[in-house]
Image (cartoon, rainbow, N blue to C red; front, top):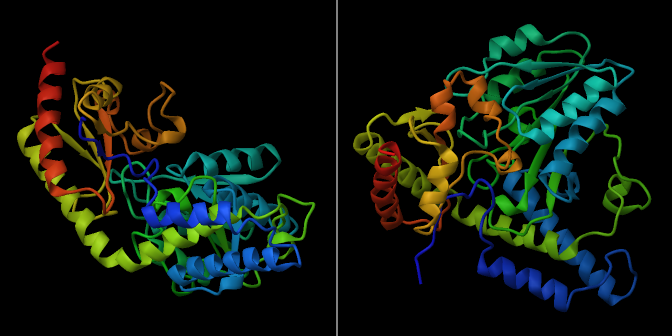
Length: 384
């Protein structure tokens, strides 16, 4: 059987054995409705409560400030639309960045169609915003600022501390939302320290199940519900809780917390090794984003001019190596990455861009095999 080398962990991750076991147990045994008053319901509610505490613990927040969703996309939509609808009487201006995930950008476009004003902050060649640009964009009408923690395509880490400091000086303070889906469980993030009011997370980016996520809502922040019809999640998110998914998120979060420091160092080493070898052994390779020593530890974006990225990923797949050309949310479209375009890449660099994304499950031996096969594939494709 061909060895599988999976380096597309920013798209999704393989569920850990303990997560699979926890989800399976919830499906087979702990199948009660958390709203039911009998023993099965009480047991399910207890499992949800334990998962809520686990998610809160990793962020250093209160358990009652964690609200479960169907995933990161819902959490992002809820954060943006919920704040906009709740604060419309105070202002109608929203600030975000040009490199956000589509679940943020599309939500902002919807708000624009409804009469809100949205400012999209530019980024530099590494994919980072300038706090000065944010300071210039703020107005008395600004009710919400949404800035991602880690960019899902190039691994740029945004200056959240500076953003939070700027917003703290405003009166009234705009609500500060952070899409932490790519950073949660990999890089430390404490909303209280940074002045963050809302944080979106997702289970399947940290070796948990798909279809479940959470939104941290700081106590006192007003947020209009998107879903109504039930009293779940403190009357803010109607619908019977996805107990198996929530349990899986709790299990994956507990595992991530236990390995965060070691996992960060391990992934950083893999990323640095791959970047160093590829850029040294494959002529013309271009690094997109921060240096390997900076930015997120698990995302590396490289361009191979003269090669089509789509062709390269399928060539590598024949050897059991899985990478991507960018965000899985628009990987089937032919238009170039909005992130790389915003960073100023040329067409040949856009066409040949590949994202490698790591997890703690990857090994140095896998990196050696990837470099060897990648060099062959690029050489062969350039010779066609």
